Amino acid sequence: MKPSKTFAIAVVVAGTLLLGVGSPASAATGVRSASTVRWQVVAGTFVHERGAARAITRLGSMGVRGFVMERDSRAGTIRFEVERPFHRTEAAHRDETTLRGDGFKPTLEREAAEDSGR
Image 1 (cartoon, one colour):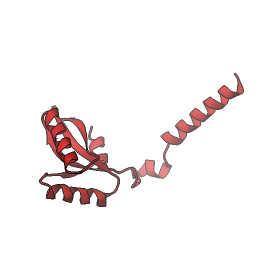
Image 2 (cartoon, helix red, strand yellow):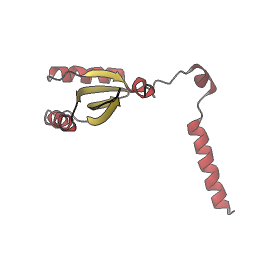
Image 3 (cartoon, rainbow, N blue to C red):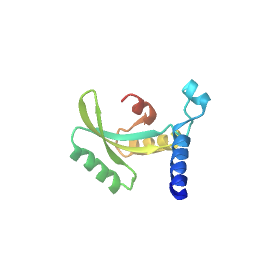
Image 4 (tube, one colour):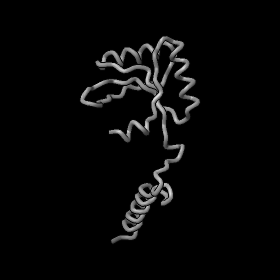
């Protein structure tokens, strides 16, 4: 093998090991760091994709950006959520309060808890 190929393989293997292996203490206790826990403000849940798209358009016309549509299929039903992710709880609460004042009925969800239930 050429030295460049060997180096490339070594870099890929080292990167995989670094990304795939956490600290032994966190693996044993199941504790996640605060930066991996994400929150999301769900502005609305809709049965049809068209309703979710309209909500995103309405939010955009009000000057609220960053909301995306997510297909959510829990318990055999398909729903479309209009949501915006956050890394900090304080920012998510601020956005939730703003949406409530604009006539929406938002909910605050923990994304890490949602992912573990699938």
